[in-house]
Image (cartoon, rainbow, N blue to C red; front, side, top):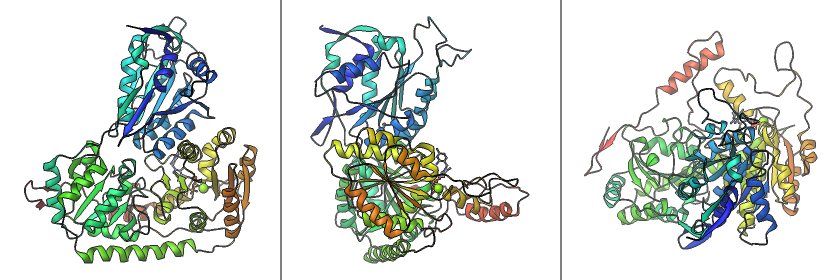
Length: 640
Ligand SMILES: Cc1ncc(C[n+]2csc(CCOP(=O)(O)OP(=O)(O)O)c2C)c(N)n1
Ligand SMILES: [Mg+2]
């Protein structure tokens, strides 16, 4: 056996460089690079290995990118993977200790959103000769535990390489999980700092070019038949498109299926963009942040076909939006865990392959024509609501819905809007007119404040890497910006142009409104000076525009809608990262969704507001369903 003598860290880097993926005959390198912030836990091991490659002229070498915060590096990686439909990803190296624990939030976000990222945290010495090392946890009950164990529950695969011999099988396991659409998420390989630097004679085959085939599992024929029988029984069917439609590239198949069957299509946050907003069968956002059109159709639906959705509480409006007792679900999902939710008829398959198979089985069948035309009418009525929301003229501060309208109008159809937390995700879900399958990127699995700018950077890197000329517009609230605006520096350093629309409303409009509706009186949701009665003084003299400028971005302060439109034009024309600062009125709401979201209210309270909210809560609670109904095998007969 021929061998190559390399350190463990060098072997990791060399292995990552030669991993490829293939789907539908198209092949590409899986790793786009390695993000890293160095400390004593990775500077000499992985750091040296990356430096050797940076200094080489090998075109296949792993690119190194420097972030400002480990959590943000994971966000940028995850956003990149999402933009590339999970067919490419980043590795992220962090030092032992806080650098590694900073990645826990990013890992949770990746795993919840089913997006691949490889985490390479440094770890304490395997030899333990000088322990405790700086930043070592020191669990008195076991020396096998380190802070990296905190990454276990948020990783789809987690391992610690304590001897070089363990590395090859761990690397292969990591790749299997990262490239498996059903299993993917954060993968963590902890690398003790002494082991990283240790040399070993590796079998050369470890560094052979390897291609991971991303499968399109087909559904079981009998399951397709059962699903077709059920769908044929429907009078008011509804299709719910989730993120899986987009990752699988099933938007074309979905359109074909919808047009052939006449079934209207609603979209989850991750699935938004599955159909262009103006397709006659596109009924828009569903669930707690849904449109009147989609939520009304969900209310009346007798058969719901979920494609690539996790059925989160936002999508189901906490299990209230599918209101008919006899409603039944067909769940087409590559992940069995999702396919079996809501007592659904499970089609465990790739979204595209599954839609094609179901389409064949349903050939010749169409939903009642009046159902399809009614859905189109409802969608049109909702679009008029959107138009009116875009046109709201509020003085002296802008309405957020008008800001969203101006950004939608001022961007090209293929530009990507990025967001994650606050009041904007819900407003965007309802109001954004998506014109391209990759034009909408709202992270709403974890809805993590601070994702936005880092995420936008990742999306733009993906667009640049694939020669895709899109602008990326990040919409970020002041709360999220204050949590993590720092990757603006990285965008400037790497010359990756993003446009950031920074919406300052002096606090949490989202949680403020939620708090008020739940009787908690907007407590703790405004950014104000403290007075003897609480945080209710004057607004704080925080200048976020100056803050963004200090980080190296170009900044435009927009005072009104005309200013905002002009700012967008110059940001689009510019080659530099530009932050557009705009102030909005947090008390001007966007059109409300008719659906509910379950956030429990105190059962007893001294506050009148809370007691009143509890009464309303109990009324909503009564509408909550379990979705336990079964479907008989032969007929698709439904038992309530
Ligand atoms: C890391 C994190 N902490 C807390 C929350 C809960 N949360 C959701 S939205 C929000 C406020 C967001 O404020 P801002 O970015 O200003 O947006 P706005 O609500 O004003 O639109 C909070 C605290 C969260 N989603 N993520
Ligand atoms: Mg805010």
